[in-house]
Image (cartoon, rainbow over all chains, first blue to last red; front, side):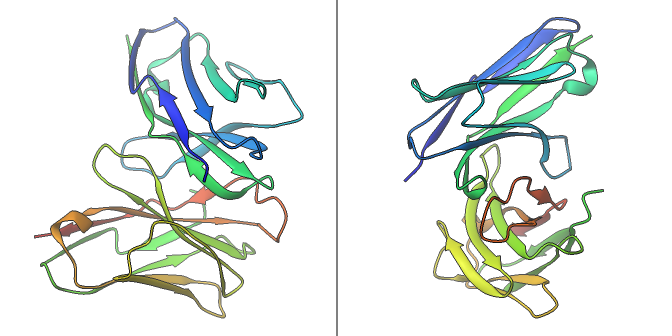
Length: 112
Length: 115
């Protein structure tokens, strides 16, 4: 089955700097890659996603890139703010949303 | 607010006991997923239901069972509880209809503590 790895497990950046989180997946049949943000005491919430027919997607300060050949995708957050501090999960799925497999998460801390 | 409601928010019980966690999906969503999140762990997929039928099963223990009712709410039953079952249990719903589910909408979770 699908296996998703995520690095780093923790990341600390200064406010205003950029943060990058990387994920790799094992099953070439996966075609949908969402990123979820989990704030303390809350459930995960989708922040951006990308499908396998697209190489990059951007939404304001957040961008995701996908390299299908290498089977890895990354989350890029620019101009980080304290409210970006949270745990971020990547995921991979087939059939654009069936059988989601999540990575282990990255705890991002943005220091003021 | 995701629109997904989970009850109870917190539950403390003893080993060997049985508990039921309840989830009401977003209005109109037919698919419900259950995930387990242990301390500092990722989201482990347990089971998915679609319109009352089991659609996919993950690493769900035999001591655990779930169902989705005609009104689309779902319950996760955990029995013969062990200390290691202490975790945050999330329910998520999506408009999955056999094709792409797209976004999962998560509830705020039920925190189970087994003493």
